Length: 96
Image (cartoon, rainbow, N blue to C red):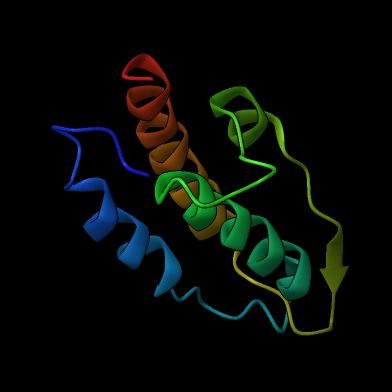
């Protein structure tokens, strides 16, 4: 359940859920399945639907396996998203 006054977090959860990252096929990237699974947990936390919600500190410290010459997400794009979701999770934590 999203706290009163933070209903806009539902739209942010949708943005996280629909996020797309560039492919780092020729260089190093993050394993796509690990990033996707973590962001699924973030979406659940933002919507107040997670039994295992992600904390802001976890979003800031999470590490993913790096792959080379295999499909992976562009590291800088994922890191930028993690910064945004950590800020959102801090706002949510402050209002609970």
